[in-house]
Amino acid sequence: MVFRIGLVFALASYSLLGQVPASRIPALERIAVNGMERGHIPALSISIQSGDRPDYASAWGFSDLENFVPATPRTIFRLASLSKPFTAVAALKLVEAGKLDLDAEIQNYLPSFPRKQWPVTMRELLSHLSGIRAYEGDEISITRHYGDVIGGLEIFEKDPLLHEPGTKYFYSTYGFNVAGAVVQAISGMPFAAFVEENILRPSGAVTMRPDSVFDIIPNRARGYYLPADGKLQNCGLADTGYKLPGGGWVAAATDITQFARALMDEKLLNPETMHMMWSSNKLKDGSTNSYGLGWNNERHNGLRLATHSGGQQGTSTFLILCPERKISVVVLANLESAPVREIALELFDEMVGSSK
Image 1 (tube, rainbow, N blue to C red):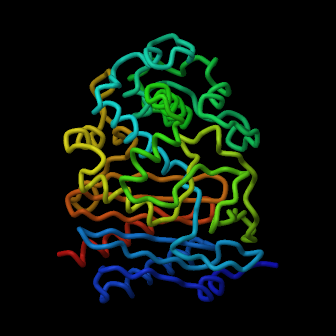
Image 2 (tube, one colour):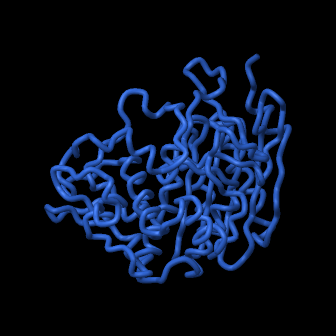
């Protein structure tokens, strides 16, 4: 059976209406639905936070095509690399507590991690400047279960660095796995428990949790893949437990805007720390790139944005946070390589227009 996505999203649409002006709702819905059509997305969930007003959240389509389960704003999606900002905030909370020096060698905190040709620091891990390698072969599709962030390090911990830290930007989820292990070692708590206690609870994020393949997770979306022939397929298998700090959480869209609101309301980090987190890092040759500490830094229509994307088996995610306007937008889809960035930017532009 070939699913016609235009029919699928028309059959299911659920919204939680906050105080986003009612006059803007049709435009927001049109952007989301048009994006679903373009991307052939089975289920799309969005959440928008504007100023001090409650979130607007809505979802369309089906979270499970085989069982015709409609998506709602409470549907749980894999976050993929949208997990990385949470790891960065967790590390920076330890910096503020005086327990972590961003520029100290990580073996000061995690002596079990093998030393490399050059010293590696937490700042370099969080900015993708560490030289730790990325996936090789079929590692992105690992189905072996690792019950702890330390265990998953065995995949790459014996490998040499690709280059001297601080000399080149190289995106590495494995680098964030090490960062999460450092957080765990310093805090003396399991990484997931530290994030829950210090980030999720203060943010009011009630659904976010590790993406366990064994746990029963209510409202979890099934993931899909769209090959070149246009016939939707179930996504490939993967156990993301080995990379919780870099891409192993699940959540509803509203939890992500709760997190964004807590940051902008200075409930998680102080302004100086957030400025550092959202500032580009200098390489050793004096050049800079657009990645800060766990966040992409970009400008859009004259506004400074902190963003992050995510993509893995059965999911595509994108978060926009604009401190200047106190607007955040998150878009989650249960389809690989979906155009979530484009949808999120269109939604953001609509919200900026409505706030003028």
